[in-house]
Length: 247
Ligand SMILES: NC(=O)c1ccc[n+]([C@@H]2O[C@H](COP(=O)([O-])OP(=O)(O)OC[C@H]3O[C@@H](n4cnc5c(N)ncnc54)[C@H](OP(=O)(O)O)[C@@H]3O)[C@@H](O)[C@H]2O)c1
Image (cartoon, rainbow, N blue to C red; front, side, top):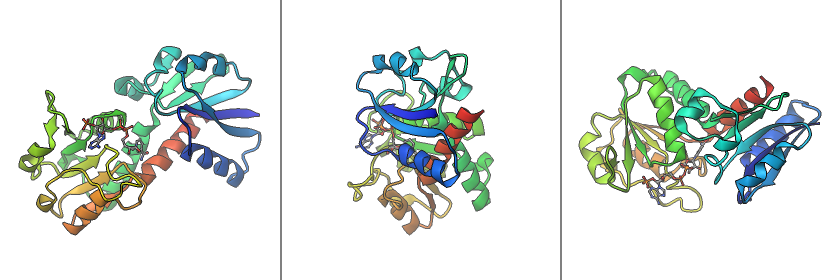
């Protein structure tokens, strides 16, 4: 039996467990099992690594950075981001960390731009929020050659505040919500943007996937912008994790 699973705390509902359990049965992948390993303290990780036939782990809050000292290697994107959400255990015991959010975002953005007939070369991005997800987004933007600015609630060197967005909006057409604002059940909330200044040239990408159409997206649609939610990124990051574990 090949074992896979998710570590984090608390683990109440898990997209990954449902995704992989359904994948195993749909694709007839035998001898594979995906479990939740609720882990309040990351110091329990070395013991979990000794579980027989453990091939791979997903990592979620609060351990995405804390797992780094327990790994032997990081792939290039995970190294730049400084956070890992996929661990691969090799037959020789080597443990490598990856960031599949990076791949999920990058691929979903590239596919969307192709569908829209828009080139990354003509875009500059505003990334709302400065947490782990936004970090993965900005490394992907960097690798795609899309210049970006972070937008934060807190005035910090190099970051724009929400009050400063209006003046740059005409030059930044890709707006990415990397904050949790608008997530169910607080669906009546949206990032504090000057929505009336958004035009049909703007592209609004929300990392939030529940609800499928967030208030951020609705407000963009009202202004004629193109919108995208976070579901495809979520699916692609799970697929990438599987590809990593099988490679
Ligand atoms: N679709 C996917 O595959 C995928 C993958 C990863 C994450 N996500 C989603 O992306 C979002 C962010 O994830 P994360 O782990 O980076 O979350 P996080 O660390 O909790 O928050 C990200 C940033 O959002 C800003 N923020 C937090 N609360 C806010 C509020 N009340 N109002 C305005 N800004 C706020 C903060 O930046 P400042 O303090 O600088 O403003 C914070 O650093 C979540 O909704 C998560 O579900 C989706």
